[in-house]
Image (tube, rainbow, N blue to C red; front, side, top):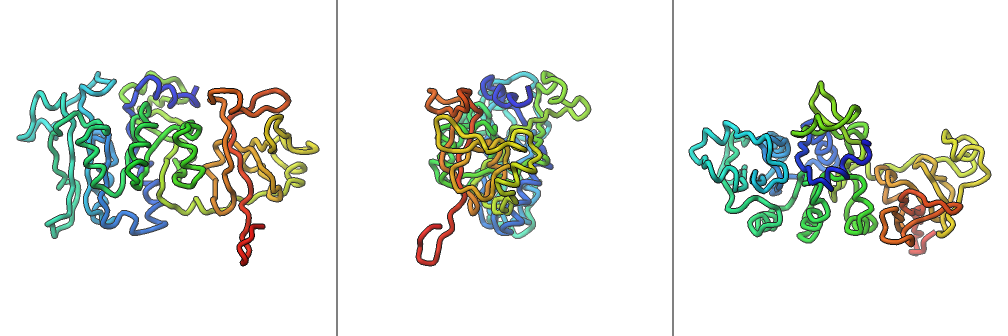
Length: 359
C-alpha cells in the first residue's frame, strides 16, 4: 500500500531514491522568500549525494552565485558499499577524466567541491571539481565527519534505512539542515522530542503532498505508485524535516468553534454528534481531522500526525504523543476499549499578558 512504501524501503534498505528538481526548487524557494540571505556566505554539504545522478548538488551549483553560497561540498557512496549494486553505470563525466581509476570507481566514494575562494568570475556547475575519497563515502566515517564539522548547512535525501542515525549525526553537530524522510519518523523516540521542543519542524512540503522519486527499481511498485510514463514513483507519506524557518510555519489555522464543528463539520465523525469523544486513558478529546480542531477548546486535544504540516508554534503547543508503535500499551490511547492511531496531543497557545502571566 502507498502509505507503507517508504517504511518498506527503510526496512529493505532500498535507498536509491532520487529527488526531483522541481521538488527541490519548490522547497528551497520557500526559505529564500522568507530570508533571501539564508544561504549567503554559508558552506553547504550534500552528503549521500552523487551529482552524476542526483539533483541537489546540481541545483545549488546552478544557484551558487545567486544565493551567495561560499562553498558547496557533496559526497557520494562507493558502489560496493551500497545495498543495491545492480545497474551501475559509469558516466562519461568520470570515465573521460584523467583521474579515472577502474578500482576506485567501485570501492571509493567521491567528493565534489564548488568554491568561490580566489575566483572573481561568476561560479556555475562547470566549475565543480571532483576526486575520489580515501574511504567509501559513508557519512559515519571520520572523513565525512570532518567535512560535516567544517560546514554550516547540511541538505540531502539520506538513505531511508539510516534516517534515525543520519538525523542524530546532524543534530549532534548542531548544524542547520534540510532533509527528506518518512512522515512516520515523527513517532520515533529520537525525532519527536526535537519537534516538541521546536528544534525541528516540517518544511514547506511537496506539491499537493506528493513526492516523486526516480529509482532503479521503480517498476517493482504497483499501479498508483509507479508511473510507467514518467518512470517515477510517488509517495504521499514523505516530508521535509528542517530547522530553517519558512512562512507557512507561521500561518494560523482558521478554525470553527466546537459548537459550529458539531453542527457544520464536513466530517461524519464530528457532525451532529453531541460532543467530541474522549480517551479512556488520557484526559483529552479526540480530534480525527486537523480542520476539526475547535477554536474555543482550552484543554488537551489528540490530533493526527498530519497536523504537523499545518502546525503554527504561535497558535498551538505540543504536549506529548501516543503511538501504536510504542513498546507497551502505555503508549496507546483508547476510546471505548479500542486503540487509536498515533496522535499528537496539543493545546492552544496561551497568551502572555504584560505582567508575564499566561492566559
